[in-house]
Length: 485
Image 1 (cartoon, rainbow, N blue to C red):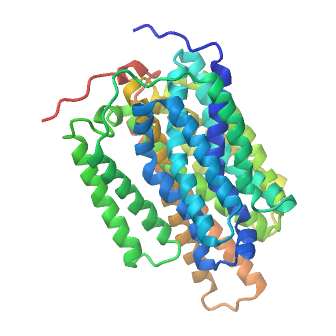
Image 2: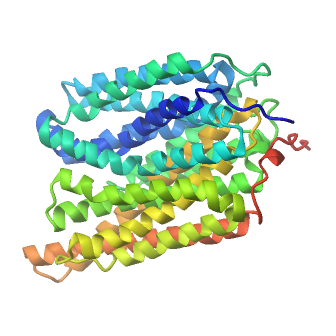
């Protein structure tokens, strides 16, 4: 089949899609910087503080596959624009929130509309850029945005909180959404696939409930013991629901997630790469932020600026990887190498202490981390959606976001729990002087870095085994669905 080149304005389309994706990704971290100010303003407790983050993660993570399928059913342009408007309205409600309850509701609504927006954006990119060389450039840029959005959120959140007000961490989305909506309205073409898939209601219920339980269970692990029914009970229920979903997808007449999407080797490897690296990456942003602010006493703005060199390297690495390395060598050596570089960077970070300087000790490992993450994200996002049929573009794109979001939720919860335990164990038998408490914090960060290194090492092994040798062969993905027994 001969593929026609995309529309002449496709690079402007990339700008619109990238802006929308940046808004969704940075919103996962921009609010973290604003939390202390919001807590003081609205007067909610430390125990309730986590719900400002968890409400977004629950709605976003559990509804992504449904959002992707809705994009396939209704049309990507309509869903994209609807997601932008809804996300902006939810952000306005959150920015004006007079109480904790309204703020949590607004964050949940952001997650709902983000679950529509993110897969629609990626599937629009997939269907807009079909020429291999242009697709490689587009996904290099998009992968850099997706990987660097968390760090940009930290910087932007610091600037807005320090110089304006915490509420602007939510209001700023109105600006992003307005620009993206205007561009999308003018540039995107309407229409859904002529061969529309039907909505798999049982599959939708099973996967949404399963992902909700998984994200909720790991979120509870941050504030409850692993032995609490609120932790293991939800995790067990989520696991059972996802197993039931997988079983149903082999028998459903119109499956929500067709097996032809996930059984492709390169695509499966890409989803796992996003899942594993998502867990490691979000842990880095969280604990390195704590280290810079609590141990080195950086301001929120200085902390955000400290991440910028890593972001710059990630962008260069993403574009170079998809345009030069993957077309020549394939994903098999590139993604495992990126995982290995990221793992080595995490081990390097364990050498930080209370006397470390930015230029000599913090900057080098974070630059290496940007190099490694750029190699992973851009390649995985490209191959996770390469060659997918038009009727499955939305759900295949949703799987990318689902993998990263659920991986990030699991990784953050695990690393938080392990780091807290390490700090507590260090203080046993010691007098809690300021110096001892500061050292306990370093122990917690080191523990998180070592475990993150383990995540990336696992990613190295998994991707080395699963990815096929040679340059990618995207058209093999558009193969008939395996016959059901």
